[in-house]
Length: 132
Image (cartoon, rainbow, N blue to C red; front, side, top):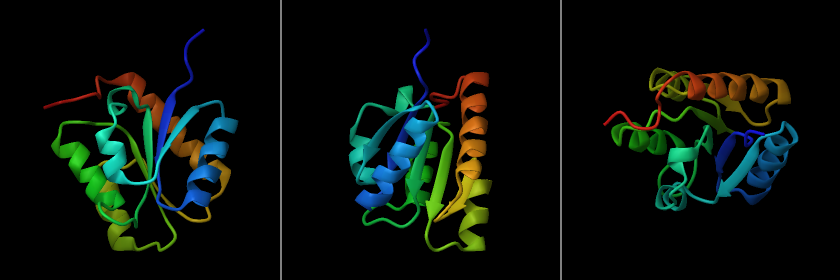
């Protein structure tokens, strides 16, 4: 039986992080959480990640900076950005940089499921791990 796709969640807000993790697991995915972009980057989990869900506004590296760091390192991991402070300019920037979703908190389950479905299909349809 294949392993459940791995979804990594990066959010400095423990309640949001835990809530998203529980929701993702209720969809049948495996979830691992990090409280900062820096802690995530220090892990060795990026190569096995199906999708990364990250908050936009965090201390240290924010979600867009994390996305840019991963892309500049050659990783094509599908990313979903979430924010409590939606901004069209940031949304456009994230999507143009390859994000599969940009969700405003609170978001509905259907929107997250759609983004995760796209991410899972992308992950399985290409050699996404590293292009550099």
